[in-house]
Image (cartoon, rainbow, N blue to C red):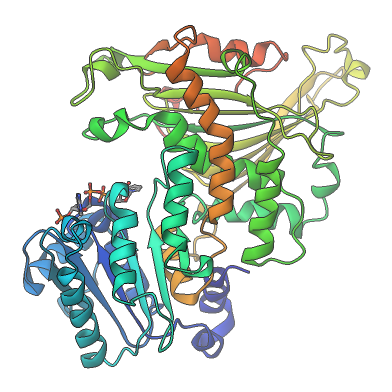
Length: 536
Ligand SMILES: NC(=O)c1ccc[n+]([C@@H]2O[C@H](COP(=O)([O-])OP(=O)(O)OC[C@H]3O[C@@H](n4cnc5c(N)ncnc54)[C@H](OP(=O)(O)O)[C@@H]3O)[C@@H](O)[C@H]2O)c1
């Protein structure tokens, strides 16, 4: 079981005595890139939530490190603002906020990466001295977590700087490194980064973030499948017609144009998050619910992904880019008009794939995966379409009109599970009517749904890497994705299709499914009628 799930269970049902057994060891969390956006928006609010729930270690401190010149007091004030602005958990009073910010320290670094590349290691030496001083004065022992919240291009350098000072060495306490995403931009760069990290840290010291794996609803997929006897017997190619995994966003690239130009939807969403969700849907039952066995099973899925030949990519993968349009009467820019985006950019803001997993369970079952920006609504979900039953008995003899029972696993928003099926419409005759049974997490009013970052941070403190991506698993995803990126770069015949902002992507993505007689689900089709809220 994920360490966090166990703690949460204890917190809500198992009593304080059990919980104390699972409190993380005392430790120091060192955050590189502590002046950045992620730290303010996600990491510090998550740490504050853990603080408020008393889930942090007994003795604990946070050391922010970055090139921005700040004092401890500046850093504390900035992080207090971040909690007030971005945390769902508001401080109960000033004393609580103060108690939290007392955990925070800051260490300014001068061009430490460049200095390290020039073989000048003094910046890391100063940092090490500061780490040891805080650990001693706060009585933390020698357990350290290094969180790399810097741009990805310096992950390898920071790890090497730490290694040069023995900060990975576990003789006197455990040492762990959390690496943000993206992990590589293709197979080659991911392999190189793995090699650099593994030259310093052991695999079990490395925690590669995929914040989708930290989401309650993604983890629940495993519980749903394997703890209930009812679904697993029909979870295979005999009964399932196809599977859809969708991540739809309403926003465009906003101020992240420069980042997105080198990334695109395939890298940003499919390579990491959506393939991981597909693996949760598709994996075999692990022997036990432990990091190693669960991650072995996702690797198995990726190793059975059918790789596209160069001639198959145009027919199996559709890429799109949003164009200027009006959404609810408002003018919306096209991607090429966005700040820091080239006027002839070929970056994909939308991608749809038809994927096969060639194994005993899934042979012949298409997995349709799509991700896009500037779509009509925000929704991430996996949808299982079961093969129709004997609907001809009820007058539906055209197989194209036969309806699938569908199981919708909604990851966000309105997290929950819906089973859609058919029943007899009341009254004379045997007309069929769609109905649904649904579960919404929001119905569990007394349960706090921890954010992905809360769960991931505490799991790293507890030494539980199940919700982090393993190096070989990431490489296996890149092995599948990289040939697509190469073909897009090298083959000018492969189209890039425009779609007006606020629509469901290019029509070519519909054709991808139409060939198999399938259609995409359009979550929240009637969004306007529902006042803009995307409910299941
Ligand atoms: N923001 C998000 O929601 C989000 C989501 C998913 C993943 N991530 C990942 O999380 C990491 C941090 O994201 P972010 O949005 O906070 O990034 P960011 O603002 O671009 O960078 C974070 C900090 O890194 C430092 N930095 C920038 N360039 C550097 C360099 N060349 N060498 C050393 N330090 C440098 C900067 O601090 P100083 O100049 O003070 O050193 C900056 O404040 C990135 O890897 C990103 O891909 C972010």
